[in-house]
Length: 272
Length: 250
Image (cartoon, rainbow over all chains, first blue to last red; front, side, top):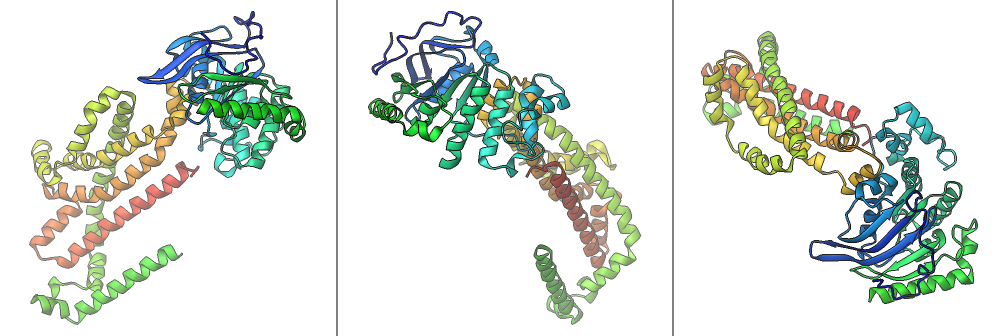
């Protein structure tokens, strides 16, 4: 059933025994099509609770579709998707917080009201929600910007608030769709380090879609390389030093560079 | 400053030109008309002052028709736009009809509405509302539909109900469009009100213009037009002011 061709480290991973109560993700030969257009072809993937898994692949290969499938924003055409043991799309949606490609902060709300959006949706009062979200502003380097409208904030700050909004929702799984793609190289590196720190203090199961192999290998425990459409997994690699405190040292380490080359090779072969 | 100064200067220059052309009798001579049929800006201004009470009385009538008509169009237009946004079926069925309704000339339906509803304010409000309904409905619907599909996904995954999605995302996103619709309405409302009064009325600025035509009161006609324009400009100004306050995030 598995169409994997690359070196796979998923094979020797134990199945997820506690999946019915845990926060892990399990995909079994998942396929998806938009009408005639086949987007995903037999994806097998698993992420234990609190692990970070990366999805890289050529543009338009179906990474975002796969992410939306996990979140329950879409239904699979075939196969099985389980998040914390739940396979119904509605139940998956209840367990996943989705962070779209652009920050999509609501311009009519202040930074703190954007961050508290999920709490307000969950029925919390305005003041209570602001207090809860505001407690994280300091830690995320946003103190003093609570009342500022999004248009007055820098790209990096907007992205941090968008991440905070996703985190504050209190879901066990975070689904991040190219969260840093719109940022410049320096800000992006800073944000990767920042996200690594945030996940060290507040571990969650994370699915990270990115087209940046280095970003994926630095942030993720495991990285799945997808082929061109219809996407299948051509390689699964381990991050040599996931979320190391010193990003610069980690990404220049020979083991990291080798992993990056291997991922790039898999990406090239999968795109052909 | 430049925004106000340049048009003001141009207006002053045009009025000056007009004043010279009239007071020398050049225009009346060229058209072979009596001087009083071609009033100068100064004569119009003095007519404006002399007839201030009459003009104010009739301006109040027309202003009420305009404002009530716009408010009615707002209530119905916004409601209808929301319904069409919620129901694909309704949108597909009704939208072409909303567009088609705009091809009916008000000049034609005004007399019919006067026959049905009499000489009172009702047919005027109805005509203004009919004209303003379209820009408001179409703009609000566009605004509601302009919401990024990714934002809808984000809201769904952040536990938002359909109502919360509307209240927190779609409705605020449509507010600037709502103001665009109101601004267009405010511009066309005086035209609609005047047409409605021409179809049958006993007061209002449109009525005044009509009766002055019969009596060759050209100076007062110009004065009436000036009042009508001033009213429309004031409403546009108020709308813009409200927009800046409400749509504060732009």
